[in-house]
Each structure stands twice: as structure tokens, then as C-alpha cells.
Image (tube, rainbow, N blue to C red; front, side, top):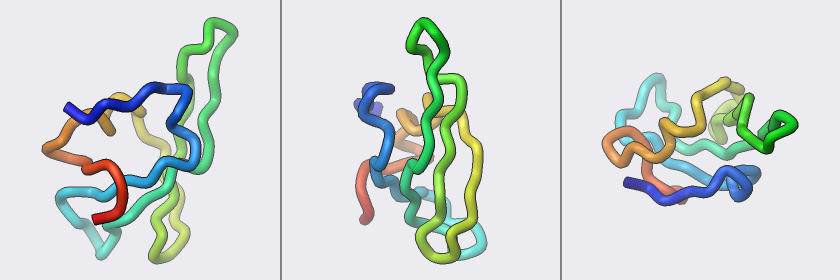
Length: 71
């Protein structure tokens, strides 16, 4: 399991294990929290074409889908 704390998500870099449409490297560009400091929105941006996607931040913990950093 990838270890990531919700407070350290912003600007973190990720590599998608299963490449789709040549989108492999991503950066977290936006994280929104509620009043209890729970993540309510996480936006990642593909580095190759700047496409943005909303994801469930807990999905980043799955090593079958994501690797920490750009590899």
C-alpha cells in the first residue's frame, strides 16, 4: 500500500501503472477539504497534455494502480 497522508497530497507526483491513452505521469493540482479536514475533492493533471481528472484520493494508495513519483 502506498503511504500518503491527505495533507501531503497537493503537488505530489504519481505514475499510473496501467497507461491509458499515453497518460502515465500525473500531479495532484487541487485538494479541497471539508470543515473536519476530510478530503472532499482531489484533482490530478496529466503531464503530457494537461488534462485534468477528479479522482478518489484513496485510490492513490493502491500499488496495483499507482506508484509514488514519476517512474
